Length: 516
Image 1 (tube, rainbow, N blue to C red):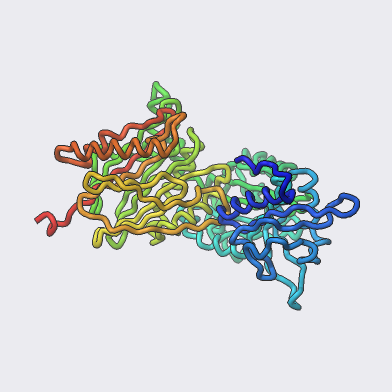
Image 2 (cartoon, helix red, strand yellow):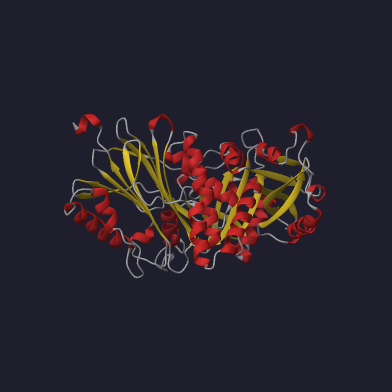
């Protein structure tokens, strides 16, 4: 993204502030952009806010553009002797982003000390300081909404304080370890005691890496739980204070015993296959089975296609189409960035999670919020898009939402309409929200959901590709002799063979009364 061009006829930061304000208006986070105010010696004496996101709200109740013009030390005098102020100065000097965790603001202007804890992220950007923050208690409330996802994925989270020795586990982590909560959680060192003797070095290596590294560390060990050997996978990360000292370890632990057994079975299969492509095709089918023939769900006839990339047969595109309780149907198509086992693994997590969330009666917007949190916790290096819909045959009501995904195409008669309802990609921001749209369908309507491999081509704009697709679908419907569903499915050819493509076409079936 290009920044604003210089314009010496204006205030030195006016153009940058205008550009930054436009940027912050488009992102769903609490954030401000401020420029340093220098003292007589040229050092930083203060920061002045020149742009603020609409969601930004400070401890005194000011929000959005009310924050523009606010100076840090004038408005929050107690910040001077805090790690946050020191972090701000370091970021402006070094240019390296920093994060201040569990920051408690010290001001007491209303006669009471502010008790809210914040996570504050700082980055030097466009000559100023970009600051974003979120309330820690809000994050904990959001985490509680993922308890059902933890059960579905058989995973849990833990927090180990390196300062106080305090340890906190989510309920599912006790279940994974078959441990009574009354006995308390395990310390990091106690994992040596339950690890298989051959895997103790893995645990020791993980503890060593945490003391010197900042990046998330993933490892897998076998543990003895009540006499049974279980496989667990852990992804852990250390948090540091303003001086760089490790203060806390956060981790996500998953029981992958069943997955490991499946993987071992696949390994046995691979020994019998002569061609690697045969194994890849089998693995893709295990992760995401694709029906060769069209099939029926309540009120709909469905046809799906998956076309792997020529250069990387194992990809991250996926679909789901299953009947739910209360005579509703889940329809979803998604795309995990990248190819290979990493993308396929992330794809499988999202596909299984979305199914569980739908059966938990989440609407499409709530489902995407939970998927985003799951991705940020388990695979923060991965981005994904998705379109999720619920269809109610009783009144033919379609409820849907998008997360950075191409729009649904609605074919009514021989006209193609785009069902646009944009939302941010999965995995970009920690806290996001989505909204849904609704439309009552008509008998013989067709819905087309797909990934970008269907319309993407090097050197061509995606909107141009969408127009080409719309014209091809409209022509196929006009020239159809008989089954419109089959006619449309036949003309859907991926534009980009270097990317995998997933396609779902649904025909709205008329009721018995409407047929008669």
